[in-house]
Length: 550
Image 1 (cartoon, rainbow, N blue to C red):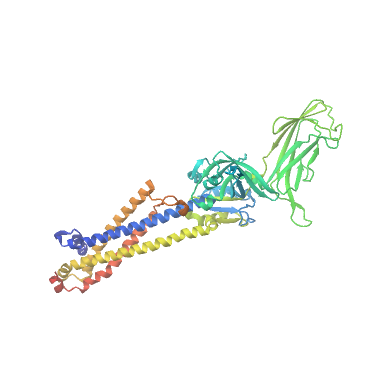
Image 2: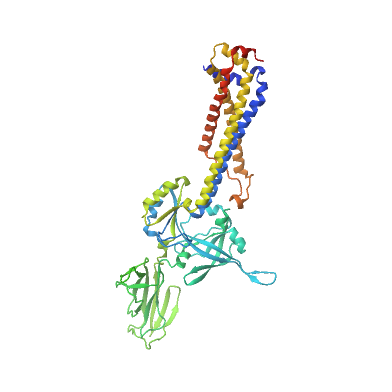
């Protein structure tokens, strides 16, 4: 058996009452280590929890990784990106990826409802914001947890919704509530354009700069405002032109320089055709916008084209006359619904049914956001994403987009390191003092052991082991105290913070297992090694003087 370890255990049992004088010192040493360890663990827990909480809020607004067009700039006006050129299915299949979603940004001004002042004047407040367009693939879990009123709107690819999500700070300033209508003005090249939206939900994250800035809207609204993609339409003109019934193709979106493909013909600028169906037929037109890339260069298609079909059913007189009686003769029209119209000419009824592909705007977005399963995989996830896409696209991380905030969060680690160093230093001083008191109290025992043949190193080990047991006891108590505080705080939130200053309303406490283990091991090893130096005082004690020591 290890003789030094056995004697150290016997000393800890405190038999014979010889250690009563050192009890207060030993108690204070253990208490110091307990408080030091608990403070270190709580510091790590709070720093980790605060970083995690703020980080998750920032990621909630912008995801982990954003893919955008190479033509994008630092403004909040998104440039169009053709989604089909990026293999989103392949990105989703990666194990590091949680979800993939489209987005687009559009600056705007929100106007409040009429407010009447005491003097009778009616005023309206305005607020400059950035609308973030989101779609059916949007991961709403973050905003669902920070929703205080209403609901997070659900959008679809086929329909255009007028529901929006605003922050509490914007809602309070404009004095709007859920279910109410607000006027929004978007700046376009042709001037401001108004849209009316209904507030579906109100959120509050505590990130004041973000809450004051961002509202959320259907991405289809931004696609239409920015004229992304092409929307084709066919109609029969109510008036004849040049003595004939005319079928006209209309388009919206793109650069307005449209070309039309009727049937199997080539694209041309002609958007009208003479209509003379003698039997049931279907007419198809394909529309896109074109632009010359250089002087004297041929026109090139710029947008994904859209297709419209007009089904025409003919009933009545078989001797159909295509020409009209006058150049601008009016046709008798009856609008059945949004897509079906009936025209009557010379006793012949033409029933037209319009069908479109819904436009090609869904093929565009301001960019693609990738949400990872773990923030720690951010650097690896960025490399994975870059492997899936062409280098012509910009890939940015949430850290690159918010460098100032993340640099500030990283500075918290330095504060934790300083606290760890100070607490370990205090623990070393406490244990050194306690060990010196124990050596002083056990001077006679040291003399007897040396007289019996024990060498200096064996006697040193007795006191080092003794100190190690005290350190271990303090570490255990410190862990129990820290774990109790973490549990109580996470359950009852009794420690609060001013949210406007700290971005959180309660002190967040995480439980980083690996960091806590490292702190415990580091504290024990450093304090244990620090005991070796003061234990050298044993080598200066002679057996004769020690045995006579009172």
